[in-house]
Length: 590
Picture (cartoon, one colour):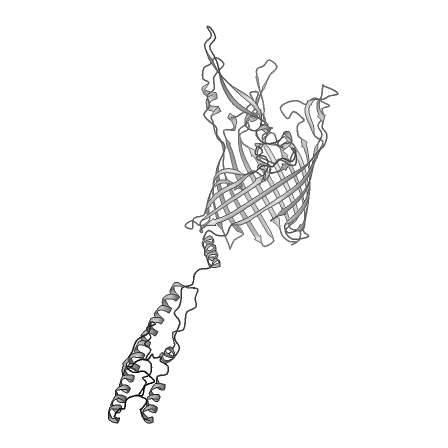
């Protein structure tokens, strides 16, 4: 009989028990079974090759020969058992290595215990670990972690519905019943208006912030986001209102550099700047806080804001020669430069005082014709050539054509465009004054009542570049009229707040703006005329929800110097009524 031992395909050497001869004595058979039970954890494969069939009777073997074979068999079984133990230990070590590698590749898989005893390992084989394939949820978590590096994008905005009525309007034309006097009473105006704004804010790293905001409103109106519900249900414009990048270097705490289109970076009231005006250009600010002092914050701001870039101009005189002076004026760009210093004082937790001093210099405004830039008519340059005719040579003619601004946006004159100037102008149509505004503002906050805090605000502005106004005299010669219309005042008081449900707020504002105190295309749009006026504003607000507010506002506006202003006499008996504007607002914030 031949005995052959083969390993199986799983590298686990399985050896079957030897079949001893049928004629072996019972003692030898019992001894062989004891050895086999000792190694019962190991599986063996027995392949018996015999030259005779199993049914044939076994040949007779002598006792001494059988005893020798049994001893040899026992020795072989012991050696095989030792080899199996070594192989099993090698396999266990390889499985442990695979497990450690799988744990490193798949961080989401819990590590297996490494304290398994060799005996337990030998008795219970450990299944090899497989690398886990990332699921859709895992991939989404990876994308979210990458987006978190760009910081969360914050969305916010508001929708405002407004019902507005205007009473007491009049024009400055000759009266229809008495041409010797001026002014004609106009019918009341009623309109529904809509404002919608969508804002996004985010950051890149710890030093860069960015902002983007879209808003409704006519593209031709820079100081109002309202859109009148009119024009046969047409679509309403929705454009870029803010787009900026802010840099706050870690190396200089408190420094902020900003560029793009953004909210004015200085403290102001609508005496000088309308709340809806978004400026363009660059600004720089530095702020420092103080903890153990009544002075809590000190800030310095500077800005450079171009607001009219113009092409190079080429202006001819009537005889065809080049007018150098007018060409230079016609190509001059306009910009707003300025700076502000402001401080916040807090003597105690219930009292705060904010003080600021600003200088706003509007460069180049003295070189423009207001109606060309700010008015409802745009002056577009036109050049055409008259061909030669006989002895007359060809001629090049340069002139300007007036185009209503309304035609370049949408709808008709009901769009509510308000960016016309009513500052003083010379007889040639140019602005009489330059504009360098020194603005001083103080705001006192009293928080003794949690439900009804009080805020008192005072703002005074003076224009340091007013000039006498040039008008035509009786003989046609130039006549200079002294111009002392350079001051403006704004006083406001507010009681209450609109932060929580059920809150109420009362407000009153008094305003007085002389003819050239401010540059009128940029200040408050809700008054009938933006200079040479005196006005009162009453306001009441109720918070139905922290995000929903109802407000009613009444504005009464009067002309300081009649229909024609301070530099022309208004005929006695002319109609000059006060104008009243009533607004009902519903604002929803999200």
